Amino acid sequence: MRDRVTPLLSEAQIHARVRELGARLTQDYAGKDLVVVGLLNGVFPFIADLVRAMELDIDVSFMQVASYGGGLESTGEVHILKDLDRSIRGRHALVVEDIVDTGLTLFKVSNLLKDREPLSLKICTLLDKPSRRKVEVPVDYVGFTIEDHFVVGYGLDMDGKLRNLPYVGVYHP
Ligand code: 5GP
Image (tube, rainbow, N blue to C red; front, side):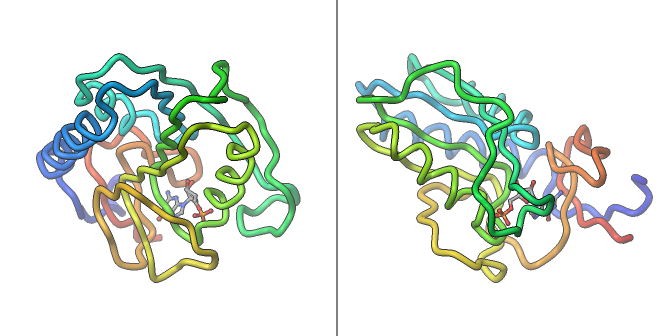
């Protein structure tokens, strides 16, 4: 499968950008009670690097969601496969995602989390594909804005595989 991947973002580029994001988050959340909410599965390498670049005392908790009716672009409600093990009520929450594509997943997750009354709710994504957006979601922190490619690696999968590539590349079926 790896032979079908053309490199897009190198390990060095990713790590430099993640350190920059971590430094910004360290400033923005200084002195605040923050829960970092990771959306599984694709977020695991990004969030591991990102939280280690944040010089703050934070909680890290994970959530896994799926859309009813199969495809992520289906219109049904978001279905929680795994919920947070921390309360976000009265605390600052930062949702961390691997990639924002149509925006539907984050739109639904944001609404669900807002009902839990956090003090603030912001979104951080490694990759953003704005040309594919179907619903408006305010993305506060973006690692890289990319063209409409199907990308894999650094957490992003093709049929469950290639998440462990240390870089991000374009997959050619
Ligand atoms: P959205 O709800 O924004 O359309 O989709 C977000 C989810 O779709 C991501 O968390 C990811 O699982 C998947 N996705 C969107 N674009 C890509 C892509 O280019 N590559 C991979 N591997 N997954 C993607």
